[in-house]
Amino acid sequence: MSLAITIVTTANRKRRFVQTDPTQIGDILDSLKRAGQWFKQSNLIIVGHESTEVFNPASIARVEFETAMDLTPYLPSGWKPDAMQALAADAETPAGQVDEDSMRMRIDFFFEGGDTLPVWLDNKDPGSAAERKARATHLFEQAVVPYRPLQPGIGLINPAAMTRARFGIAVLYPPNTAWFANEA
Image (cartoon, rainbow, N blue to C red; front, side, top):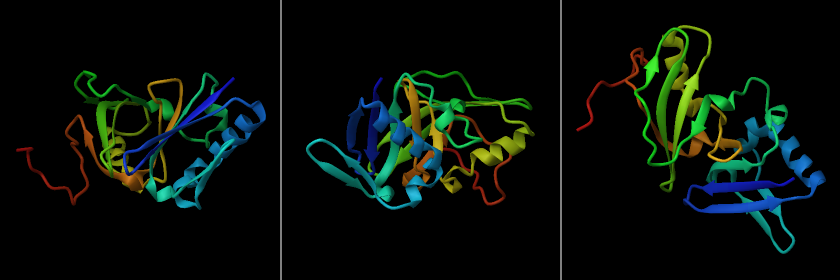
């Protein structure tokens, strides 16, 4: 059993760490239960055999945990990471669709420093289409946005490090403060 951790910073740098000790993996996975507070707490500290790295949470754009293990039991209740699946940067996607039962579309997240993350959203939340779209436009107000990375595991986005998000569909019921204009 192994756990690979990739941290992408707002400087668009990727740092990768690996752990194979089951006890240490358990401790790391237990900390996922508090993941909703990660980007608002003190430093993230990773201690290796030869060095220690300290990350300022405000400088972390996203974190990915790669493992064959099912991480669902370690996540905060109510999280739905399966709703967003990471895509390859050049992936073709079908047209987005919003109806009374679901919302499906491509979303491209852009982060400070230049990192980008394309995802496919397939959300089957209860409520009206207008309610689902309203929740989607409040991404920056969330503490953490979970997603499924390309490899098996879980990814966590720091909304405070995002500069913008581009939805692959026009939002029909945007907030009253939205501006209407076409891309030039």
